[in-house]
Length: 304
Length: 187
Figure 1 (tube, rainbow over the protein chains, first blue to last red):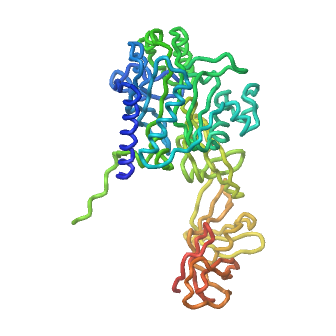
Figure 2 (spheres, chains in turn yellow, red; figure 1 turned 45 degrees about the vertical axis):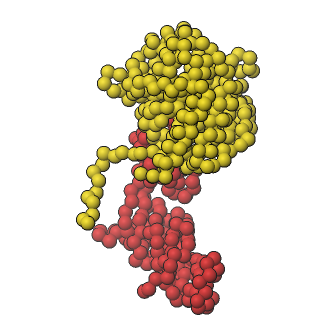
Figure 3 (cartoon, each protein chain N blue to C red; figure 1 turned 60 degrees about the vertical axis):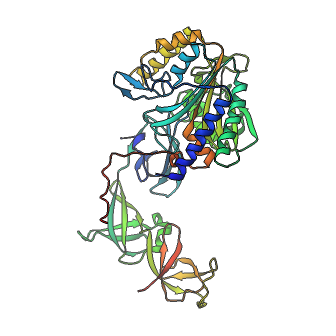
């Protein structure tokens, strides 16, 4: 247990909650035990009782948005199976916020302000200035490849589909180079998740951005999909992909699909809070801020 | 076959017709993409280190390698000869596969011999060895200034930088992974 790490995490948490209160956001705790844990096929969830442990509060918070609340946020534990490493834990703390009527650029400003506040809470300067760029420009810069025309084979010599080939290059050649604070826009449409698609660009991209601090993915923001039919099709496609991988499909969240149709134009963002704390403190992993438990038998206490 | 979740330091895998050992690894998963494990792999035959990224779900082939603790006997032009102290069986490891390790090999030393597909292919010396200095400039008594070093030649022919106060004929402990002087030892 790292007492100093836990103190610093508490400072960041308090600063974050104060920031949201100051900016008119309502804290809305939603259930951890949910009927459907996730849509995207790369997320693995833990089954619990007759439901699931959530992989994100997204579905529940969208139901709350549909009920007419304009600015909401939640900080709470989420669970993703098969994810463990210096920057991943099966259980982690997620921060999500949703703002009716907001464009992505509004969320970018909020992210910058919030990151600033988190760093200040532990007495360190946030890396500035922020760089705002696109996925395509970063690929040209670091690999010389133009994603608009590149095929999976151009991207990877391994047996990868396009998205896998893209991410293989991204994690090895692009992401590690993102030093300082970076906002990365215009992700391939095939990785839209629950974002709307932009058709005014030279290639199909999703209306979403990611936030990086010193090579660590901190947050994912979306101009949210509000089309029930498209939402329903995405769920089906993800479940088909799951079946092809030999995995169990996730229950379709019909309440979410109905809610999406009632949501106003909304932008939303999910941020790994353990990572925000680690970035603010300059740690090499999320570990110093976390309490870990073990089922291993402990060695006997020495006799006093 | 191994899964990507089996990857850990020291795991030995077969890839592109060669045996490799994992020296570093990290789980990486983009929020909206599939998971990968980034690794550094050391070729067990050549010692070359490469970066390799595995996609979760990829299968890794097990390398047919075995370790045996043996005693180093002697070297000749072609090979370094070692013996199993239980069975007295002797094996010769091709000299060209030994490389830097030969700097630290002294007769009767216990070493790890690596067998690949049944054939001895390399020697691993202990992390720390003790060797005698056969030549260095005279010691300067009391000079314990940190950072000041002089080259010393070992009984094996290896050159190690030692502090100025160390005398010719002294036995010293060396970290074989870095080639660095650790301390003087009494023999």
